[in-house]
Length: 189
Image 1: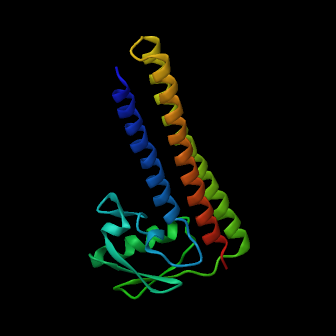
Image 2 (image 1 turned 135 degrees about the vertical axis):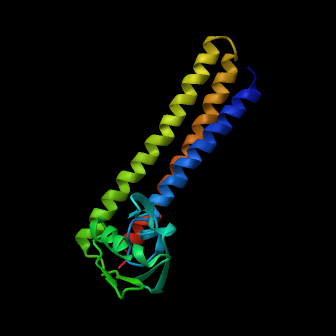
Image 3 (image 1 turned 90 degrees about the vertical axis):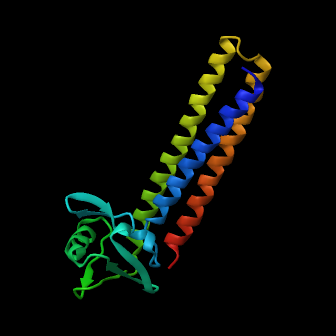
């Protein structure tokens, strides 16, 4: 084992950590703010011919006004199922249908709901930080094992640990930035 293989391991860890951040970004996009966004409902599971299907695969979602969404199903038969999925979701929205499209009016968030959303968002941020730290722990254990088996030197281990910590810190900082931006968005009146 050489330093090239440690670099390869670090590259793999970076890809996995980046994946945790992409997943977090997707989750945060689905958290409701004061403005309408298709991301709010596009991953909503809708029962379609017996299988849960993301709403974005069943309809076009547009934002005709800042506080409303318009959902136009590709298949008119799925309209009732889409309405049911929205009603039973934890979004707290009431769909209005004219038989062809569904309109969702987003009422302004009250202070209590904003606080709940921020709390939920902080929970998601912590899950992402844990995912990044788990990746760090796994790689760190692997590097220690390689050093124990004399596949790398102690100096290689130290350098690898330092690089791994820098990588972890960079991703944890990115998670914090995402959280700050989303919190500002949620609390904006």
